[in-house]
Length: 307
Image (cartoon, rainbow, N blue to C red; front, side, top):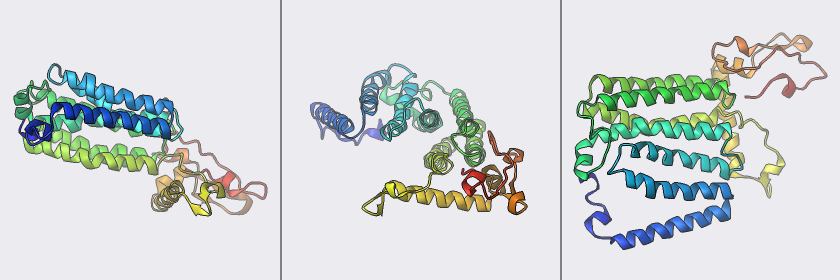
């Protein structure tokens, strides 16, 4: 393949034996670091992913198009590892949603790349969808299908209460709306230029949707306490939490939908002061806001639900 012709193993700068040795050394040392610094589940996921990539995925590349789906599983595991390393369960809704996002994202990303370099993959002897799809119809159909699946994830996340309703708007409609538009353009004109637009869109799409997931996550609402500081200094986690909280507060100021969904919009004053019912907001999916009374017996924390 021209795309990989200058790599050290291909040019002979590194021997196959040295490459295997380096792979084993780095894989083993990384597993050790995971064992020492995280937990058994994260370590097991890491080792299994190395095995899946170096084993089944590599074996299938010259033999079956299924290698792309196996490779997508490999790409979906790291965010789950991050979640379990932070103390969560691999079966938590957040872990499943993050893993699903990475799994689905890889298909538009890779099928576009595969189409652009289909002749190169064919020369390399790899079994890829683009190699076996002379018209591009299957490639375009798969890109559109998985882009549509990906667009559904923010709505599921918001409906399940994992993120605020605005995640469905920011990521579900805006980001994914553009991604679907680009996918549709490639379907209408299956040129390398349009495939490149799909590929480039996937590059900025992923960090954007991950950041929006973080910003709209319902887990980033706790107050910072003295226990979250070390020797009087805020930890990195605390600083991140403060930044996220500031961004979300600004978002509620600018967006009426977010304010309604968070219960921050009130009417009246004194004991008659009430928060508007967020369920009336057209984007407050799964909202459980109800009218509340703010009096001497209730605090602001009881009256207004944090996002």
